[in-house]
Structure formats: structure tokens, C-alpha cells
Image 1 (cartoon, one colour):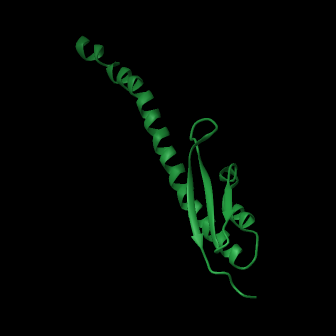
Image 2: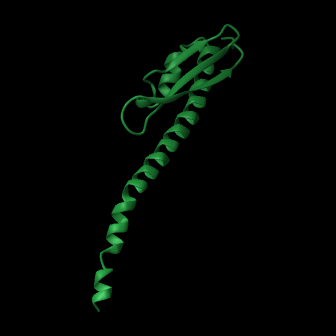
Image 3: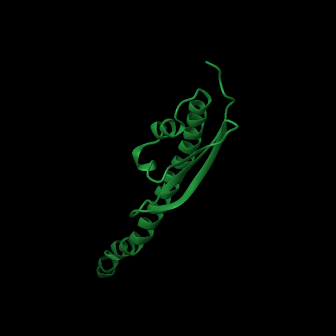
Length: 114
């Protein structure tokens, strides 16, 4: 009986040793989710900006309406003369402030008559 009691706390010690690894894995997974969301929404913002550009609207305002507020900080919208629009969306860091990288998407629609 004494031997079983001596090993009773072993599982707790192993769990405490693994907690930092589990936290790091969770943060990496959350960062991947944020990057995927930013990539998906950058494409949507580029298409919305191109639609606005095609009908004579404001492409920057259209792109900003598609994105949640946390992705509009550092948003870049550049409209070209041929009807194409380039949108750059920063990928926020999961932990702390700042950005991991920037995603650039381009969309083009022909100008539409009124």
C-alpha cells in the first residue's frame, strides 16, 4: 500500500510540467485561426472595394465595412486606373499587440455605367 501512495502525486507533477507546452500549443492554434480569418476577410474586402470602385464609390470605405474593427488598424487600399484594387490587411498577433504579417489581396472589376 505505501508504494501506491508514493506514486499518487506523480500524475499531478506530470500535468504541471506539461502545462506550458499545452499553453504554447493553444496560442499557436489561436494564431493560425487569426491568420486564416484575416486571409479570408482580406479577399472579401478586396472584392467589396473592387465593386465600389466599379460603380464610382469609395473603395477604402467599402473595404473597411467588410472588416471587423480589429483588422482595420493598418488597412491599406490602393485603387488602380484599370479598375483593380489592392487591399492589404494586417494579421494581428494572438498575444500582445502588433502584427504578425500583412496579407495582400487584389481584385478587379470592369467599370460599370450608370
